[in-house]
Length: 83
Image (cartoon, rainbow, N blue to C red):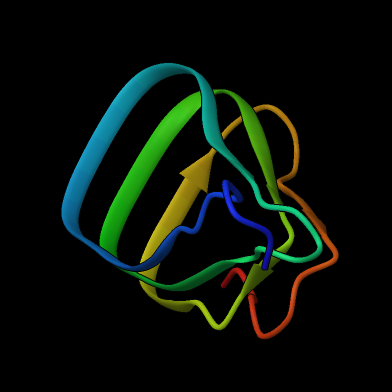
């Protein structure tokens, strides 16, 4: 990984509720620095747009709800499956 490339990994979100969001999720990594090892548990987000998860890896999702007018975009991910 090049110097200065951001790294986001090993993050847990537990018991999170949000409403009236413009965009529920906006997670975008890059090919050589994926957003890794996130745990989302008991998360409910309501908003206008579902958003996207792109270039993420090894997420654990338990009781996650995204309530929006469209579908969540999932691209270039490894082991990230929305329930």
